[in-house]
Image (tube, rainbow over all chains, first blue to last red; front, side):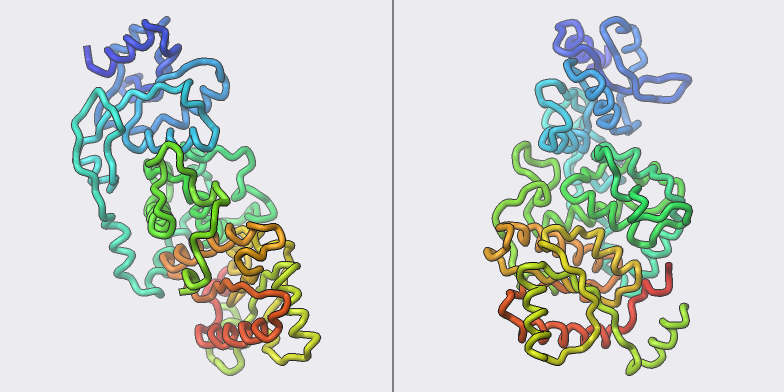
Amino acid sequence: MEPMAEKVKELLNEGRITGFVGLRKQHNQPAPHLFTKENMADLENLVVGDVRYPLNKVLLKLAHRFPKDRLGVMVRGCDERGLNELFKWNQLSRDHVTPVGIACPAALAEACECYKPYPSEWVVGEKTEGISHSKRLEKNETLTQEKRLQYWLGQFNKCIKCYGCRDACPMCFCKVCSIQDRNFILTGKLPPENPTFHLSRAVHMIGRCIDCGLCEEACPSDIPVRTLYKEVGKIVENLFDYRTGEDTKAKSPLNLLGEPTMDISDVNK
Amino acid sequence: MGKEATSQAMNPEKFEPKIIAFLCNWCSYAGADLAGVSRMQYPPSTRTVRVMCTGTISPHHILKAFQKGADGVIVAGCHIGDCHYLKGNYMTIKRVAILQELMKFTGLQEERLFLNWVSAAEGVRFAEMVRTFTDKIKELGPSHLKTSY
């Protein structure tokens, strides 16, 4: 049997988890599925491979509905970063989540420009080198200020305010969403406030975005939102030496008051 | 391009910047008040929004100011260590620093957002800050976001 299916079977049989959130082939398409002890036969159709669909969002919804159950979940490098953050933000309990790891192949790591395409432990896949420099960000660096503005305003102009980026994001868990506030983002207008709508979301991704890419995949207008949030991650790393999801204890700079590490000389450059 | 923006772009001398100044009740607003009471002359470019602490200023507020056509935004709070609510300004500087970098990335001229600490006794510094910043905004010209919404 395939190694991940084996692992899941073991966890379910030992009672260490009551359900496993993974991907199952249904009607020839992979889709999120909850594997339980009662339907172990489903494990025959477990999808493990290049099909990449971060499952933390599904896990979150299940964990909220069944807070006492211990659930397992398939995690890639990005998912594990997501879990580390969700534990710190008190959205999930570490005791109730059992991750089962999969390492990403080189082609996927390159496409995602992922700096750590593997979780801390995995049962499927081989470790590949992370990508340290993002070509997308470097490309933006080559543009002049006017060209950048033209590019980004043009991209944001395509937005149809479907909230797909927000709905797909595994790190978006706010009960009341700021970019849905009628006093802030007017209703009945398309495109939504350009660039406030997208920059607000980018600001919310500080200390939260784990670079899974679901936002960009969900966007029907092909807006390069992932690039924007990659930049946010880089800014936080440069200013605060904080890499989202890397540490299991340290809180993000906007999640923690802390002591002043910056002064006026560090801003207004 | 909007009529106002066109005429301002074509006549740089006639361009009167509109600057939104977020001032905290305890320090910078009092500093601004002192500048006024002392009859100091400084450009009438600022429109003041008094907040209790700059720590309550979200990047949303700053972005909204720019979206609505502000040519520049000043955020002025208490000096580090002197915040009336002890640590509010720690958050302010983090937020503004990140927002400035984000504005730079998207071509929004991060120089239009200015953060400073001004105490209640620093009326002279407040006037000086507004003078310098207004000149800088005059150089930069009207905000490009004036043409939308």
